[in-house]
Structure formats: structure tokens, C-alpha cells
Amino acid sequence: MTTAAQVTAIIPARAGSKGLPGKNVRLLAGKPLYMHSVDAALEAGIGRVIISTDIDEIFAHPLPPGVECVRRPSALAQDSTVMAEVLQELLPRTGVTSGIAVLLQPTSPLRRAETVRNGIDLFRKGGASLVMSVSPADSAVLKWGFADGDRFVPLVSPDFCFANRQSLPPLIRPNGVLYVFDAARFIADGNFSAESIRILPVQADEAQDIDTAEDFLRCADLMAKG
Image 1 (cartoon, rainbow, N blue to C red):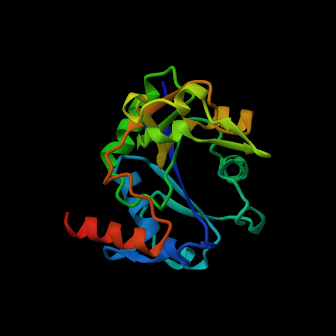
Image 2: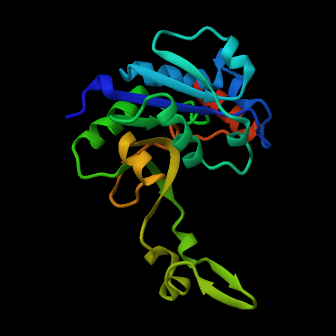
């Protein structure tokens, strides 16, 4: 059984952002955006928190005990970089080669410590290659498809394309609030495993994601309302 001391939180904070430049260090409710994820991890009882960043300002900020900054290589801080590439490089370099890893993106500042604990507890129960937070999604996407020249190719099933909206099954979507996985397996596979994904439903207010200035203001308003 993995102990609490073997849980590591990873917070990826990249400098580049097209939708809202500098968002990861922008002040939200009196502290930089990335610190909301740091605090959620610490309040959840995670003993080690690693910030992967190419932002010089973060290295200059004082950090609580148990929190460290690791310089992200510039080659892994591009718009085209996928998170798996960042983790493939980061986990072995920081010695996170076993135990539970929890990915907490700073763009989900309303994440609660209780949610982080629930995600870890769900993973500890076994039978999951990944625990992923989810939110309800619009079932109308089941009617969508791809264009193959001038032909329509259904996204899922042709039956959904012509079904009444009310008869469509309910959908969920990943919301980026948290991902919990086994560090050793990730390193071995080189990516997240979809073999057996367990879901952790998250309320709409907690699942707010910041990509634009409008998103940022909406989160600030929700925090102000308590």
C-alpha cells in the first residue's frame, strides 16, 4: 500500500499563454494563480509539491516547506508541448519514480483540497490506471462528426446524428481539475494509461478553467462570493 508520504503533486506553470499572457503569476484573490494549486495540494496533506516552470518570477517567490521549483527546459515549454512530454522528463529527474503522482494544473484555482484527497483515495482503492476529474457535458456533441472531403463521418454512431436530443445519453468531459496516476507506470508507458480510468465528478463552480481574461474575472467573482 502506498503511504501518504509517497504522494507527489506536480504543478505545471508555463510562461507562454496566448489567451491570457502571464496568467500563471497573475494575482487572483491576493495571490498568484499557481499558488492556489500549491495551497490545495498542501491542504490535502501532500508532502511534496513540484512546480515545473520556465517563469523566472516563480523562482523568486518564497515557497512553503515541501514545495520546490524545477526549471523546465525551453524545448518543453512550447505551445506544441504536450503534458506527457513534460512529465516524462520531470518525474525521473526529480526522483519521482514510484508512488502516486497528482497533476494539478494552475488554471483550476477553485479546486478544493477535499477534491484532491478524494481523488487520491479513489486511486488507492485500486483497479484504476488513472483517476480523472470530470464534469457534465452537452450530449449534443454526439450528433457531430468529421468532414472527409464532402462526406460526413459521424463522431460516434450514425444513430445519434438523427436522434432526438432528449434521447441522447448523458455525457461527461475531463475538466483538468486533477489527474492521479502511478509514477512508475507512467514512466514505463511514457503516457497516461487509458486502460482503466476511474472518474471523480466535480461541481461546475470548482471546475472553472482559466484560459482568457473573461475566465479569470469569472473565477475572481466566484471567489469573492465565497
